[in-house]
Image (cartoon, rainbow, N blue to C red):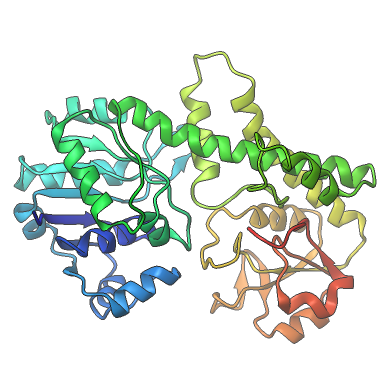
Amino acid sequence: MSKIITVVGLGYVGLSNAILLAQHNKVCAIDNNAERIKLVNDKKSPIHDREIIDYLKTKKLNLEATSDWEEAYRSSEIIIIATPTDYDEDKNYFNTSSVESVIKDILSVNINALIVIKSTIPVGFINHVREEYKSNNIIFSPEFLREGKALHDNLYPSRIIVGEQSDRAQEFAELLYQGAIKKDTQILLTNSTEAEAIKLFSNTYLAMRVSFFNELDTYAELKDLNTKQIIEGICLDPRIGNYYNNPSFGYGGYCLPKDTKQLLANYNDVPNDIIGAIVKANATRKKFIVQNIIEKGAQVVGVYRLIMKHGSDNFRSSAVQNIIDKLIENKIKVIIYEPSLIISNFNNCLVENNINDFKEQCDIIITNRLEDDLLDVLDKVYTRDIFNNN
């Protein structure tokens, strides 16, 4: 049976969920960005995601975007919140103000709708907001999406988890399942706090894996060993597996840095060594990369792309930005090549969008992931990309 659903937030989480559900339900997407709203209504994607672009253009979707939240909330049976929850370094806690603001707005016009939070939240948040706003209609369903492949990961989900063991939770999970192409996906219903923990521990495990192979690469580089051979030999063990093992400048992006720090904050009264080490290891890796670059004696360092990986247009919290900051602190001139930037200066660095002029001006070019654009100047390139994948 078709549902009337509102999705709040047109980022990669919100938009991919809206499209997934709009295949079989009436979906209204809420955002405060007029340009994003217009693009979605014109069947164009505001973010770089191949499947989102394709589905908006070619699929029959019952989807409308608007800024008029009041009418949308009033008529909805299910309201999904997918607003950003950035980590607040000063408070040592996720900034959940956007989520709580939406909850207040929803309850002011509709106390019966099921509110499903897709934003990443601290452990214990659902219990807090249920008590704070006197509503039991708030549940959490963690997302496990990659930027640039968000709709793909919704169409082929690794698992569907909803943080409540109830009929309505099962019904919501089945709506996600209904929109997916993959039809052997396991549905898991858990308690709310356990669902919150699943999200943070999952991303922290991934960050730990990134950090492990980065530290392996640091060792190999300092000892003049072949990183690729070592990783290939280790990953032939099926318990380890040949995936998520390509060295980098450090984990970055929107999720892993903030989720690891939030999980560590949740450990403030719990004995731990590994969780804290994962956060510390990322800083250590970036410090090592910077030192390596400095020791090469370049006067001008070129940064090829601010993005973290192939197929993305987002460079929020990318590891290379920390490296840029450290290079500037060491009085090294930095030039950035980033086609998605339409400005001439970024973080006090010149932005050069002519690739040939960029390559000509730089003594060394650093890149988190090697691209074909740089194959003609490999003698200038510094990267830790061993397998040429994400």
